[in-house]
Amino acid sequence: MRFLLMPIRSNKQGVQINVGKDGADYNAVVNTMQAHPDDLKELGAASGATIRVRTDVGEATFQVVEAKVSRGMLFVPYGPPTCQLYGGDTDGTGMPTSKGWEVEVEVVSREPQASAKEPQ
Amino acid sequence: MTLAVVKHATCTGCGCACDDIEVHTDGARVTRAVNACELGETWFRDHSPNPNLPPALIDSKPASLADAVALAADLLHAANLPLIYDHGYSTCEAQREAVALAESVGGIIDSYTSQCHGPSFVATQLVGKVSCTLGEVKNRADFLLYWGCNPAETHPRHTSRYALHPAGKFTPRGRRDRTMVLVDVEETATAKDADQFFRIREGTDFEALSAMVALLRGQPVDERRVAETGFTVAQLRALLDRMKAARFGVMFFGLGLAATRGGHGNVGAAYRLAMELNAFTKFVALPMRQHGNLVGSDMVLRWTTGYPFGVSLSRGYPRYNPGEFTTTDLIARGDIDAALVLGSSAAPGFANVPTIEIGPKLTRTGTIPRVQIATAATGVSAAGTVCRMDDLPMPLRPALTSALPTDEDILNRVLAEVRKKPAWYPQLKGEAQIA
Image (cartoon, rainbow over all chains, first blue to last red; front, top):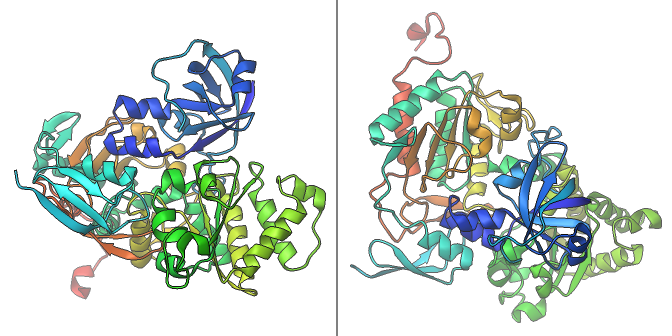
């Protein structure tokens, strides 16, 4: 199933960067995506399930939780996992395009994972 | 334990650089940061000096500071094209030393700007911009347009301290004297504060902003094309009427413009709109900058090299070219053979080159640096100057002292070691006589 990926900055992400990037909480925040409940139903995944997200450049796994976001979109705080999804092409601007990537999503585990963070 | 309170401390947790923080310490750690938001609170508390931190690590093993500095100088001096990369958390004084170091080793200096608001600088160079300070926003602005940003999450005190809520000289009733509109792809937490929220279709900011410029000029626009952005022409006209009716309007924009495809075009269209509105009223546009002193990095690079980011000093004079001398491109092409990362942990992209990391935390996110040197945290235990998102320099008032050196100290020491070595460029014949 295809989605539009929107990496974002969040308050919890900022707080956890200050606490320390090698902490479990930071990793949980940057590994947790938000999706519309109907999209999760269509995927056949429960809130907190594990999904694999692929682009032409790379792939990463995330926990996905339901949240009040638009259908067809995935929101996740920037972090090491999102860095795997976009490459080094900057269109000559120096800035990798990080928002609005079309991604392919497959469910790895349909059941909730304990580490998933609640939406902001 | 000595309890102490430092008033008017400057927070370097984000680009707001709030300088009204009351920092309480027990002599060793920050215990409270009154007035700080949750980002500022953790910035102060979690950057208190850590007495258990070794001064340095070499290949992940504790090492003396002298050995770490010597190895850092060796790695940078031996490299053909080293990169000095600044995360934007150091003081301006340290950033100035970083430029000198890049020049000494004939390397490239870049900052996190190239990965966030770099396109906004390119837009400024293409279009120009009309700007102001946050003090002017507080005292004068009666119309605020936030576009592609979410200050409620990323800059929690932006609306309460500078923009929407505070009472100003010409906005004495604070929030009641202001109108706030939010444009974003999602109804974020900031929408709760907005008088009006517009959901824009992802990737159509340039089209919507360009249509607004056209309508402002009285030029025809195609209603069907406008509808593809999520706006109707009537909505854009009504928004423009509100903007024109303002006494002092401000557009704040974030990575929703700069980090989507064609970011420099998006921001250029925003700057163009703000400029053209000045035919009707006073209107400005400002980027929502992040990281405590990323703006300082841009400023220091501008006054030392003439350019804000992505500067190569490999020929002995500054050259600027986004896409060529910017970090993401350098890593993707494998151009660099050593890197010094200032102010944070090295990203996974640096895994293929020997990396030196200087910062307050010896953490890792995907790569193991050859050298890690622990330093005092900017604004918490290190003094100096930072620049706010509106380019205003702010003095720091650290509440604690640290046994660790500052970023500036370390860069100075590495620079001194490098200068003991042979110059990287060929000595000209007769140079000694000319000198």
